[in-house]
Amino acid sequence: MKRIAILGATGSVGKSTLDVIKLHEEYFNVVALTANTRVEELIRLSIVHQPEIALIADASKLPELKRGLEKHKNIQVLGGVEALSSVAESANAELVMAAIVGAAGLEPTLSAVKQGCRVLLANKEALVMSGEIFMREVEKHNATLLPVDSEHNAIFQCLHGQSAQEKVDNQLIRRLILTASGGPFLHKPLDDLSKVTPQEACKHPNWEMGRKISVDSATMMNKGLEFIEAHWLFAMEPDRINIVIHPQSVIHSMVEYIDGSILAQMGSPDMRIPIAHALSWPNRMMSGSSPLDLMMNNRLDFLELDARRFPCVELAKEVLVEGGAAPAILNAANEIAVDAFLSNQIGFTHIEQVIEDTLSSYNNDSVESLEAIKAVDFKARAVASQLIMKEYTE
Ligand code: NAD
Ligand code: MG
Image: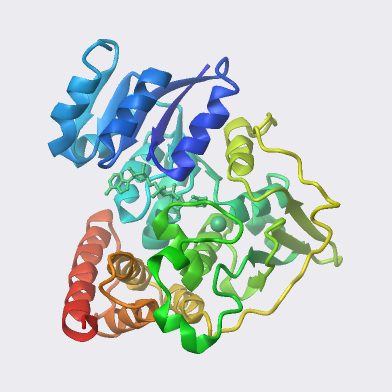
Protein backbone atom coordinates (compact mmCIF):
# COMPACT_ATOMS: atom_id res chain seq x y z
CA MET A 1 0.00 0.00 0.00
CA LYS A 2 1.42 3.37 -1.06
CA ARG A 3 0.40 6.45 0.89
CA ILE A 4 -0.83 9.04 -1.63
CA ALA A 5 -1.87 12.69 -1.22
CA ILE A 6 -3.96 14.34 -3.92
CA LEU A 7 -3.45 18.10 -4.16
CA GLY A 8 -6.33 19.62 -6.09
CA ALA A 9 -8.57 16.58 -5.55
CA THR A 10 -11.75 18.34 -6.66
CA GLY A 11 -10.36 19.30 -10.09
CA SER A 12 -10.40 17.48 -13.39
CA VAL A 13 -7.02 15.74 -12.90
CA GLY A 14 -7.66 15.19 -9.18
CA LYS A 15 -10.93 13.40 -9.81
CA SER A 16 -9.50 11.33 -12.66
CA THR A 17 -6.72 10.27 -10.28
CA LEU A 18 -9.25 9.16 -7.69
CA ASP A 19 -11.13 7.24 -10.41
CA VAL A 20 -7.96 5.31 -11.30
CA ILE A 21 -7.14 4.69 -7.63
CA LYS A 22 -10.65 3.35 -7.04
CA LEU A 23 -9.80 0.53 -9.50
CA HIS A 24 -6.69 -0.39 -7.48
CA GLU A 25 -7.64 0.15 -3.86
CA GLU A 26 -5.35 -2.68 -2.76
CA TYR A 27 -2.28 -0.62 -3.81
CA PHE A 28 -3.11 2.90 -2.69
CA ASN A 29 -3.98 4.44 0.63
CA VAL A 30 -5.37 7.96 0.05
CA VAL A 31 -3.92 9.93 2.98
CA ALA A 32 -4.80 13.52 2.03
CA LEU A 33 -7.27 15.34 -0.20
CA THR A 34 -7.14 19.08 -0.78
CA ALA A 35 -9.41 21.64 -2.44
CA ASN A 36 -9.53 25.39 -2.79
CA THR A 37 -13.16 26.45 -2.24
CA ARG A 38 -15.41 23.58 -3.32
CA VAL A 39 -16.11 22.32 0.16
CA GLU A 40 -19.14 20.18 -0.67
CA GLU A 41 -17.20 18.26 -3.26
CA LEU A 42 -14.31 17.79 -0.85
CA ILE A 43 -16.71 16.44 1.79
CA ARG A 44 -18.21 14.01 -0.71
CA LEU A 45 -14.79 12.75 -1.88
CA SER A 46 -13.56 12.46 1.71
CA ILE A 47 -16.52 10.31 2.69
CA VAL A 48 -15.79 7.98 -0.25
CA HIS A 49 -11.99 7.80 0.11
CA GLN A 50 -11.58 8.26 3.88
CA PRO A 51 -8.28 10.18 3.84
CA GLU A 52 -6.41 10.90 7.08
CA ILE A 53 -6.46 14.62 6.18
CA ALA A 54 -9.07 16.70 4.33
CA LEU A 55 -7.82 20.22 3.68
CA ILE A 56 -9.57 23.30 2.34
CA ALA A 57 -7.23 26.11 1.24
CA ASP A 58 -9.90 28.77 1.70
CA ALA A 59 -9.88 28.91 5.51
CA SER A 60 -13.29 30.63 5.65
CA LYS A 61 -14.80 27.31 4.53
CA LEU A 62 -13.18 25.32 7.35
CA PRO A 63 -16.24 25.37 9.67
CA GLU A 64 -18.36 23.96 6.84
CA LEU A 65 -15.80 21.22 6.19
CA LYS A 66 -15.74 20.36 9.91
CA ARG A 67 -19.52 20.13 10.05
CA GLY A 68 -19.64 17.98 6.93
CA LEU A 69 -17.12 15.49 8.27
CA GLU A 70 -18.03 15.57 11.98
CA LYS A 71 -19.15 11.95 11.96
CA HIS A 72 -15.80 10.89 10.48
CA LYS A 73 -13.56 11.17 13.52
CA ASN A 74 -10.68 9.44 11.72
CA ILE A 75 -10.39 12.34 9.23
CA GLN A 76 -8.34 15.30 10.40
CA VAL A 77 -9.79 18.51 9.00
CA LEU A 78 -7.45 21.38 8.11
CA GLY A 79 -7.73 24.80 6.47
CA GLY A 80 -5.56 27.58 5.04
CA VAL A 81 -2.69 27.97 2.61
CA GLU A 82 -0.03 27.43 5.25
CA ALA A 83 -1.38 23.99 6.12
CA LEU A 84 -1.63 23.29 2.39
CA SER A 85 2.01 24.13 1.79
CA SER A 86 3.16 21.38 4.15
CA VAL A 87 0.42 18.81 3.62
CA ALA A 88 2.70 16.18 2.03
CA GLU A 89 4.75 16.20 5.22
CA SER A 90 1.74 16.29 7.62
CA ALA A 91 0.22 13.31 5.82
CA ASN A 92 3.55 11.50 5.59
CA ALA A 93 2.82 10.84 1.93
CA GLU A 94 5.04 8.68 -0.29
CA LEU A 95 3.28 9.68 -3.51
CA VAL A 96 1.86 13.12 -4.24
CA MET A 97 -0.39 13.98 -7.17
CA ALA A 98 0.31 17.69 -7.81
CA ALA A 99 -2.93 18.73 -9.52
CA ILE A 100 -3.57 22.22 -8.20
CA VAL A 101 -3.96 24.70 -11.06
CA GLY A 102 -1.63 27.67 -11.35
CA ALA A 103 0.96 29.33 -9.13
CA ALA A 104 -0.99 28.25 -6.04
CA GLY A 105 0.48 24.79 -6.62
CA LEU A 106 4.10 25.88 -6.41
CA GLU A 107 4.72 25.73 -2.66
CA PRO A 108 2.80 22.55 -1.86
CA THR A 109 4.42 20.78 -4.82
CA LEU A 110 7.90 21.97 -3.98
CA SER A 111 7.39 20.94 -0.40
CA ALA A 112 6.48 17.41 -1.57
CA VAL A 113 9.74 17.43 -3.55
CA LYS A 114 11.61 18.42 -0.39
CA GLN A 115 10.06 15.42 1.39
CA GLY A 116 11.70 13.23 -1.24
CA CYS A 117 8.29 12.01 -2.41
CA ARG A 118 7.44 10.53 -5.74
CA VAL A 119 5.74 13.57 -7.28
CA LEU A 120 3.26 13.05 -10.10
CA LEU A 121 3.36 16.43 -11.77
CA ALA A 122 0.26 17.83 -13.47
CA ASN A 123 0.80 21.40 -12.20
CA LYS A 124 3.01 22.66 -15.03
CA GLU A 125 2.88 26.28 -13.80
CA ALA A 126 5.14 25.38 -10.85
CA LEU A 127 7.88 24.23 -13.19
CA VAL A 128 7.40 27.19 -15.53
CA MET A 129 7.82 29.65 -12.66
CA SER A 130 10.71 28.06 -10.89
CA GLY A 131 12.29 25.51 -13.28
CA GLU A 132 15.88 25.76 -12.18
CA ILE A 133 15.19 25.86 -8.45
CA PHE A 134 12.56 23.14 -8.74
CA MET A 135 14.85 20.72 -10.59
CA ARG A 136 17.71 21.48 -8.18
CA GLU A 137 15.47 20.53 -5.25
CA VAL A 138 14.37 17.33 -7.01
CA GLU A 139 18.01 16.28 -7.26
CA LYS A 140 18.98 17.45 -3.79
CA HIS A 141 16.18 15.56 -2.08
CA ASN A 142 16.33 12.55 -4.34
CA ALA A 143 12.66 12.98 -5.23
CA THR A 144 11.17 11.17 -8.21
CA LEU A 145 9.40 13.45 -10.65
CA LEU A 146 6.97 11.76 -13.01
CA PRO A 147 5.20 13.82 -15.69
CA VAL A 148 1.42 13.54 -15.85
CA ASP A 149 0.87 16.17 -18.52
CA SER A 150 -0.01 13.90 -21.45
CA GLU A 151 2.73 15.23 -23.79
CA HIS A 152 5.49 14.90 -21.21
CA ASN A 153 4.24 11.57 -20.05
CA ALA A 154 4.37 10.43 -23.69
CA ILE A 155 7.95 11.66 -24.08
CA PHE A 156 8.92 10.02 -20.80
CA GLN A 157 7.53 6.73 -22.13
CA CYS A 158 9.40 7.17 -25.44
CA LEU A 159 12.66 7.71 -23.55
CA HIS A 160 12.41 4.30 -21.86
CA GLY A 161 13.17 5.74 -18.46
CA GLN A 162 16.50 7.26 -19.50
CA SER A 163 16.78 11.01 -19.22
CA ALA A 164 16.78 12.89 -22.50
CA GLN A 165 19.99 14.58 -21.41
CA GLU A 166 21.77 11.22 -21.13
CA LYS A 167 20.66 10.43 -24.64
CA VAL A 168 21.59 13.85 -25.98
CA ASP A 169 24.97 13.53 -24.24
CA ASN A 170 25.39 10.24 -26.00
CA GLN A 171 24.16 11.96 -29.16
CA LEU A 172 21.21 9.61 -29.49
CA ILE A 173 18.35 12.10 -29.74
CA ARG A 174 17.71 14.64 -32.43
CA ARG A 175 14.63 16.35 -30.96
CA LEU A 176 11.48 16.15 -28.87
CA ILE A 177 8.21 16.75 -30.73
CA LEU A 178 5.33 18.11 -28.68
CA THR A 179 1.95 17.60 -30.30
CA ALA A 180 -0.83 20.16 -29.96
CA SER A 181 -4.47 19.74 -30.94
CA GLY A 182 -4.75 23.42 -31.92
CA GLY A 183 -7.75 23.82 -29.62
CA PRO A 184 -11.22 25.05 -30.54
CA PHE A 185 -10.05 27.96 -32.73
CA LEU A 186 -7.63 26.22 -35.06
CA HIS A 187 -9.68 27.10 -38.13
CA LYS A 188 -11.64 30.12 -36.94
CA PRO A 189 -11.20 33.24 -39.12
CA LEU A 190 -8.57 35.41 -37.40
CA ASP A 191 -10.86 38.45 -37.41
CA ASP A 192 -13.45 36.59 -35.35
CA LEU A 193 -11.08 35.71 -32.51
CA SER A 194 -11.59 38.99 -30.65
CA LYS A 195 -15.28 38.16 -30.23
CA VAL A 196 -15.13 34.59 -28.88
CA THR A 197 -16.79 33.94 -25.54
CA PRO A 198 -15.41 32.09 -22.48
CA GLN A 199 -17.90 29.32 -23.16
CA GLU A 200 -16.57 28.83 -26.71
CA ALA A 201 -12.98 28.97 -25.51
CA CYS A 202 -13.64 26.29 -22.87
CA LYS A 203 -15.16 23.88 -25.38
CA HIS A 204 -12.08 21.84 -26.30
CA PRO A 205 -12.55 19.50 -29.26
CA ASN A 206 -10.77 16.49 -27.67
CA TRP A 207 -10.13 16.92 -23.94
CA GLU A 208 -12.28 17.74 -20.91
CA MET A 209 -10.29 19.95 -18.58
CA GLY A 210 -10.51 22.72 -15.99
CA ARG A 211 -11.39 26.22 -17.26
CA LYS A 212 -7.94 27.79 -16.98
CA ILE A 213 -6.13 25.11 -18.98
CA SER A 214 -9.00 25.08 -21.49
CA VAL A 215 -8.47 28.78 -22.21
CA ASP A 216 -4.70 28.16 -22.29
CA SER A 217 -5.35 25.51 -24.94
CA ALA A 218 -7.45 27.94 -26.98
CA THR A 219 -4.69 30.60 -26.95
CA MET A 220 -2.10 27.80 -27.11
CA MET A 221 -0.31 29.35 -24.15
CA ASN A 222 -0.72 25.82 -22.83
CA LYS A 223 1.74 24.60 -25.47
CA GLY A 224 4.06 27.47 -24.61
CA LEU A 225 3.99 26.46 -20.94
CA GLU A 226 4.55 22.85 -22.01
CA PHE A 227 7.54 23.90 -24.10
CA ILE A 228 9.12 25.36 -20.95
CA GLU A 229 8.02 22.33 -18.94
CA ALA A 230 9.72 19.99 -21.44
CA HIS A 231 12.93 21.99 -21.28
CA TRP A 232 13.17 21.52 -17.51
CA LEU A 233 11.84 17.98 -17.23
CA PHE A 234 14.07 16.55 -19.93
CA ALA A 235 17.02 18.98 -19.75
CA MET A 236 16.51 19.62 -23.44
CA GLU A 237 17.74 22.73 -25.22
CA PRO A 238 14.92 24.89 -26.64
CA ASP A 239 16.11 24.49 -30.23
CA ARG A 240 15.69 20.74 -29.92
CA ILE A 241 12.03 20.99 -28.91
CA ASN A 242 9.50 21.30 -31.73
CA ILE A 243 5.77 21.81 -31.67
CA VAL A 244 3.52 20.28 -34.30
CA ILE A 245 -0.25 20.61 -34.62
CA HIS A 246 -1.95 17.23 -34.60
CA PRO A 247 -5.71 17.86 -34.45
CA GLN A 248 -6.75 14.29 -33.60
CA SER A 249 -4.87 14.15 -30.24
CA VAL A 250 -4.08 10.48 -30.77
CA ILE A 251 -0.30 10.85 -30.69
CA HIS A 252 0.51 12.55 -27.40
CA SER A 253 4.12 13.45 -28.31
CA MET A 254 7.25 11.97 -29.88
CA VAL A 255 10.99 11.54 -29.59
CA GLU A 256 13.16 11.53 -32.71
CA TYR A 257 16.40 9.54 -32.47
CA ILE A 258 19.50 10.09 -34.62
CA ASP A 259 18.95 7.00 -36.72
CA GLY A 260 15.71 8.55 -38.01
CA SER A 261 13.38 6.55 -35.75
CA ILE A 262 10.53 8.52 -34.27
CA LEU A 263 8.91 6.95 -31.22
CA ALA A 264 5.38 8.09 -30.45
CA GLN A 265 3.00 7.28 -27.62
CA MET A 266 -0.61 6.88 -28.74
CA GLY A 267 -3.89 6.48 -26.91
CA SER A 268 -7.33 7.95 -26.41
CA PRO A 269 -7.30 11.55 -25.19
CA ASP A 270 -8.04 10.49 -21.62
CA MET A 271 -5.95 11.74 -18.69
CA ARG A 272 -6.52 8.48 -16.82
CA ILE A 273 -3.88 6.92 -19.12
CA PRO A 274 -0.90 9.13 -18.15
CA ILE A 275 -2.19 9.17 -14.57
CA ALA A 276 -2.24 5.35 -14.40
CA HIS A 277 1.21 5.27 -15.99
CA ALA A 278 2.66 7.62 -13.39
CA LEU A 279 0.87 5.86 -10.52
CA SER A 280 2.19 2.44 -11.46
CA TRP A 281 5.60 3.32 -12.95
CA PRO A 282 7.78 1.35 -13.66
CA ASN A 283 4.96 -1.18 -13.93
CA ARG A 284 1.65 -0.84 -15.73
CA MET A 285 -1.94 -1.04 -14.56
CA MET A 286 -5.47 -0.64 -15.93
CA SER A 287 -6.56 2.98 -16.27
CA GLY A 288 -10.25 2.45 -16.91
CA SER A 289 -9.92 4.09 -20.33
CA SER A 290 -11.30 2.29 -23.34
CA PRO A 291 -8.71 1.04 -25.83
CA LEU A 292 -8.06 3.27 -28.83
CA ASP A 293 -10.10 2.09 -31.80
CA LEU A 294 -7.68 2.40 -34.73
CA MET A 295 -10.40 2.01 -37.35
CA MET A 296 -12.38 4.85 -35.82
CA ASN A 297 -9.18 6.92 -35.61
CA ASN A 298 -7.67 6.07 -38.97
CA ARG A 299 -6.12 9.45 -39.77
CA LEU A 300 -3.14 11.20 -38.26
CA ASP A 301 -2.75 14.76 -39.55
CA PHE A 302 0.17 17.07 -38.85
CA LEU A 303 0.16 20.82 -39.50
CA GLU A 304 2.59 23.61 -38.95
CA LEU A 305 1.86 26.03 -36.13
CA ASP A 306 0.64 29.44 -37.33
CA ALA A 307 2.43 32.02 -35.16
CA ARG A 308 -0.02 34.79 -36.11
CA ARG A 309 -2.94 32.79 -34.79
CA PHE A 310 -1.12 31.64 -31.66
CA PRO A 311 1.31 34.41 -30.60
CA CYS A 312 1.44 33.12 -27.01
CA VAL A 313 3.66 30.20 -28.05
CA GLU A 314 6.38 32.56 -29.29
CA LEU A 315 6.13 34.62 -26.08
CA ALA A 316 6.71 31.50 -23.98
CA LYS A 317 9.70 30.47 -26.08
CA GLU A 318 11.17 33.96 -25.71
CA VAL A 319 10.85 34.05 -21.92
CA LEU A 320 12.52 30.65 -21.66
CA VAL A 321 15.53 31.93 -23.57
CA GLU A 322 15.50 35.20 -21.61
CA GLY A 323 15.41 33.34 -18.28
CA GLY A 324 15.51 35.01 -14.85
CA ALA A 325 12.11 36.19 -13.69
CA ALA A 326 10.62 36.30 -17.21
CA PRO A 327 8.87 32.89 -17.13
CA ALA A 328 7.31 33.68 -13.73
CA ILE A 329 6.10 37.06 -15.04
CA LEU A 330 4.61 35.42 -18.12
CA ASN A 331 2.85 32.83 -16.00
CA ALA A 332 1.44 35.37 -13.54
CA ALA A 333 0.24 37.73 -16.28
CA ASN A 334 -1.37 34.80 -18.10
CA GLU A 335 -3.25 33.69 -14.97
CA ILE A 336 -4.58 37.21 -14.38
CA ALA A 337 -5.50 37.71 -18.05
CA VAL A 338 -7.26 34.34 -18.31
CA ASP A 339 -9.24 35.10 -15.14
CA ALA A 340 -10.23 38.49 -16.57
CA PHE A 341 -11.30 36.85 -19.84
CA LEU A 342 -13.30 34.18 -18.01
CA SER A 343 -15.14 36.90 -16.06
CA ASN A 344 -15.86 38.84 -19.26
CA GLN A 345 -13.62 41.78 -18.34
CA ILE A 346 -11.40 41.52 -21.42
CA GLY A 347 -11.61 39.98 -24.86
CA PHE A 348 -9.88 36.77 -25.96
CA THR A 349 -7.19 38.51 -28.03
CA HIS A 350 -6.42 40.85 -25.10
CA ILE A 351 -4.95 37.91 -23.20
CA GLU A 352 -1.77 37.89 -25.25
CA GLN A 353 -1.56 41.70 -25.19
CA VAL A 354 -1.83 41.84 -21.40
CA ILE A 355 1.00 39.30 -21.09
CA GLU A 356 3.20 41.14 -23.55
CA ASP A 357 2.57 44.51 -21.88
CA THR A 358 3.24 43.07 -18.43
CA LEU A 359 6.52 41.59 -19.63
CA SER A 360 7.64 44.87 -21.14
CA SER A 361 6.67 47.01 -18.13
CA TYR A 362 8.56 44.84 -15.68
CA ASN A 363 12.33 44.78 -15.24
CA ASN A 364 13.62 41.26 -15.45
CA ASP A 365 15.68 40.27 -12.39
CA SER A 366 17.48 37.09 -11.58
CA VAL A 367 15.55 34.84 -9.20
CA GLU A 368 17.64 32.68 -6.91
CA SER A 369 15.11 31.65 -4.28
CA LEU A 370 11.51 30.60 -3.83
CA GLU A 371 10.90 33.88 -1.98
CA ALA A 372 12.18 35.86 -4.97
CA ILE A 373 9.90 33.94 -7.31
CA LYS A 374 6.91 34.51 -5.05
CA ALA A 375 7.70 38.23 -4.98
CA VAL A 376 7.90 38.36 -8.79
CA ASP A 377 4.61 36.48 -9.06
CA PHE A 378 2.94 38.89 -6.66
CA LYS A 379 4.22 42.01 -8.40
CA ALA A 380 3.53 40.77 -11.93
CA ARG A 381 -0.07 40.02 -10.92
CA ALA A 382 -0.47 43.59 -9.69
CA VAL A 383 1.04 45.00 -12.90
CA ALA A 384 -1.22 42.84 -15.09
CA SER A 385 -4.34 43.72 -13.07
CA GLN A 386 -3.55 47.42 -13.33
CA LEU A 387 -3.00 47.18 -17.06
CA ILE A 388 -6.35 45.43 -17.44
CA MET A 389 -8.11 48.14 -15.46
CA LYS A 390 -6.45 51.02 -17.28
CA GLU A 391 -6.08 49.78 -20.84
CA TYR A 392 -8.42 46.97 -21.60
CA THR A 393 -11.63 47.30 -19.64
CA GLU A 394 -14.34 48.93 -21.70
P1 NAD B 1 -9.23 22.28 -12.28
O1 NAD B 1 -9.54 23.71 -12.34
O2 NAD B 1 -10.22 21.30 -12.75
O3 NAD B 1 -8.82 21.88 -10.78
C1 NAD B 1 -7.92 22.62 -10.04
C2 NAD B 1 -7.76 22.10 -8.63
O4 NAD B 1 -6.87 22.99 -7.95
C3 NAD B 1 -9.06 22.07 -7.83
O5 NAD B 1 -9.06 20.95 -6.97
C4 NAD B 1 -9.00 23.34 -7.02
O6 NAD B 1 -9.67 23.22 -5.77
C5 NAD B 1 -7.50 23.50 -6.77
N1 NAD B 1 -7.12 24.91 -6.62
C6 NAD B 1 -7.37 25.92 -7.50
N2 NAD B 1 -6.89 27.07 -7.02
C7 NAD B 1 -6.34 26.80 -5.84
C8 NAD B 1 -5.70 27.61 -4.84
N3 NAD B 1 -5.57 28.94 -4.98
N4 NAD B 1 -5.25 26.99 -3.73
C9 NAD B 1 -5.39 25.68 -3.56
N5 NAD B 1 -5.99 24.86 -4.45
C10 NAD B 1 -6.46 25.42 -5.58
O7 NAD B 1 -7.83 22.11 -13.06
P2 NAD B 1 -7.29 20.83 -13.86
O8 NAD B 1 -7.78 20.88 -15.25
O9 NAD B 1 -7.51 19.58 -13.06
O10 NAD B 1 -5.74 21.16 -13.93
C11 NAD B 1 -4.89 21.01 -12.81
C12 NAD B 1 -3.44 21.14 -13.25
O11 NAD B 1 -3.13 20.07 -14.11
C13 NAD B 1 -3.14 22.42 -14.04
O12 NAD B 1 -1.86 22.88 -13.73
C14 NAD B 1 -3.20 21.96 -15.48
O13 NAD B 1 -2.38 22.73 -16.33
C15 NAD B 1 -2.66 20.54 -15.35
N6 NAD B 1 -3.13 19.64 -16.41
C16 NAD B 1 -4.46 19.37 -16.55
C17 NAD B 1 -4.91 18.53 -17.55
C18 NAD B 1 -6.38 18.20 -17.70
O14 NAD B 1 -6.70 17.40 -18.56
N7 NAD B 1 -7.27 18.77 -16.94
C19 NAD B 1 -3.99 17.95 -18.43
C20 NAD B 1 -2.63 18.23 -18.26
C21 NAD B 1 -2.21 19.07 -17.24
MG1 MG C 1 -0.73 18.73 -21.96
